[in-house]
Image (cartoon, rainbow, N blue to C red; front, side):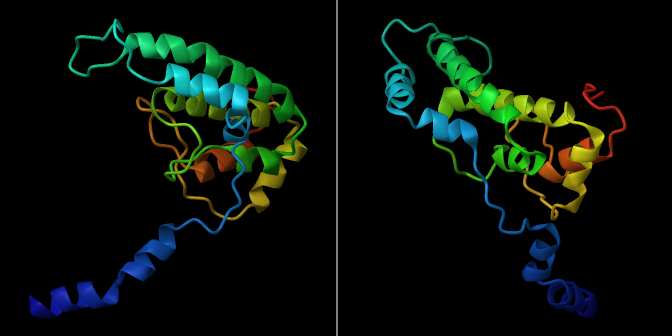
Length: 178
C-alpha cells in the first residue's frame, strides 16, 4: 500500500499534471473589454451596475436584482453592436484571440459581464463559422488552448480548443452549430 501511495505521489507531480492541461502563453485581446473601457461606456456601467433603492429582486432560490439587469442590458447591447463590424474585419486567428475566457481577467464584472462575454463569444464564434472552409482550416495550426470560454453563469463549460477544432474541421461554412 505504501509503495502505491509513494508511486502515485512521486510519479505524477503537480507540474506534470498541470503541463498536460495548461494553456501556452496566448496573447488574448478581448475586444469587448477594450470597447467597455471607453469613458462613455465605463461611466454608464458604473452608474448602472449597483443596487439602488426601489430595485426589484427575484424571490427564487437565487436572489437576482432584475432592475440592475434591465439597466445594464442596453449598455451591453451597445458594446456588442459596436464590436460586430470590427469582428468582420479580423482574421480567424484574431477572432480566436478575442474570445473571452475564464481567466479572472476582464474589464467588466458582475451583471454586465454575464451580458457581454457569453453573447460576445457567441458573436465571435458565429463570425468564425461564417468564414470559408479554407480560412477556418488555418485554425488547425494553432497551439492547444485548454482555457474555458466565458459562457456566463448558466453556460456549460467549453474549451477554446474544442470550439476551434469543431469550427476548423466543419465541412459546412456558415452553418449553425448543432
